[in-house]
Amino acid sequence: MGIFDYFTGFGGRDMAVDLGTANTLVYVRGRGIVLSEPSVVAIDQATGDVHAVGLEAKRMLGRTPGSISAIRPLKDGVIADFDVTEQMLRHFIQKVHQHRFAHPRVVVCVPSGVTGVEKRASRRRHCRPVHGRPT
Image (cartoon, rainbow, N blue to C red; front, side):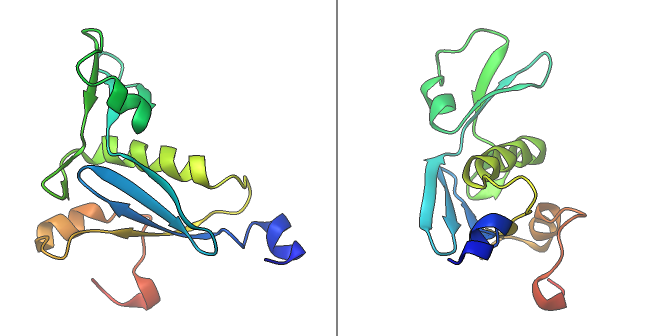
């Protein structure tokens, strides 16, 4: 990684996220797998605020107060709760990607057996297909 890449953030710009039912992995080009944490989120049911993500949220499973619940937003390899999964992904990407001004390019892996409806649902309006190929 050159000095230009270091200051502009292009060295660690490309990353891949493997959404797993048990653990989520984040791979950064040039650095390898930099994050492997449980796919668990602790949320305040009254306000919708996220209190913890990953390992910290897993430690809260079964030990949370009545208003906070630790949930797994992925069930059987597919996204069960899109809003919570989005917040979990934001947390993991911000934890790994330290540069403020350079936005990372992210590839998210989904299981090969997902239905067309699940595939369309996992893509948001700000996602675009790789090389312009429709999916």
